[in-house]
Amino acid sequence: MLKYIIQNPSSEVPPEELVQAMLDHLPKDEEVIMTTAEQLMHKGELAAKLQIAQNLLSKGLSIDVICEITQLSIEEVKQLQKK
Image (tube, rainbow, N blue to C red; front, top):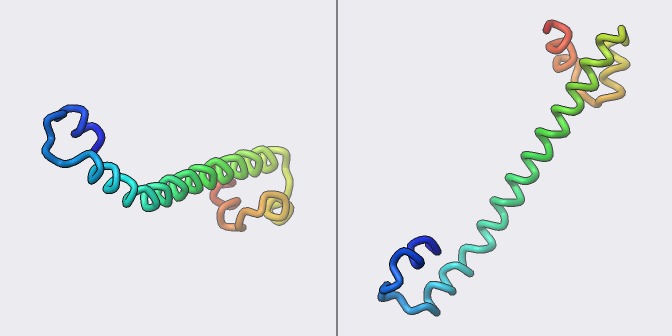
């Protein structure tokens, strides 16, 4: 919307209405941003756990111990073991 306003300065919509429209959408956008941030954090945490599990597998630790340390499921660790 802001891009449109900048590209079309002769817009007939009063500035007050544009500001209100942006404010009305802010909570929704904030929620999406937080959800996206949380997803990225989760992906980063998962990637770190998988890397740690891979390192532990290469050192010969048992799957049970690796699951306990990383909080990964047995299936996730077994998938790493196959690689």
